[in-house]
Length: 210
Image (cartoon, rainbow, N blue to C red; front, side, top):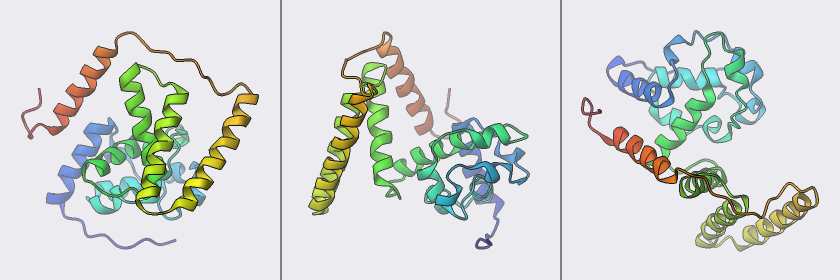
């Protein structure tokens, strides 16, 4: 499948590429488009043209709009198959995670609202308690979905969601895969401080980072 052509302008492409590399910790310029990541992508059938190598290419060419709004960013399951196959050890899962955060900061509507809701609920729970408690996570996640559907007047979706999650929850309880206990970790203040410092570092003007 052939994708749309892109015009490369180094002046606009370099800052975006540099930001993604710094935030993801991945050297995207080492990608030489061998497509081994694409061949092993577990969600390739769901994302169509947007395989890991194409996403990296979009970032390198400075196509911010496409990089922040494409199926792979929201459907990547972080299986890290792409990274294990990459001859240069590029972990695309870390890139998609970075682009999720950048899309949120840019107030871009997610292509998969439920994925965004789960992402936010997981992060907030981890920051609050130092680890994720399943019952709280799912409760907050479902509240986000219900509020979104209620705002859109999609009440049938709310009923279907509650029924589906109730069936799933009961099945997990029977298999002892759903834990009702509440746990917290030590060092929660340190975790919050690190997150706050990282957030401030991202928001600092260029050249002002410590």
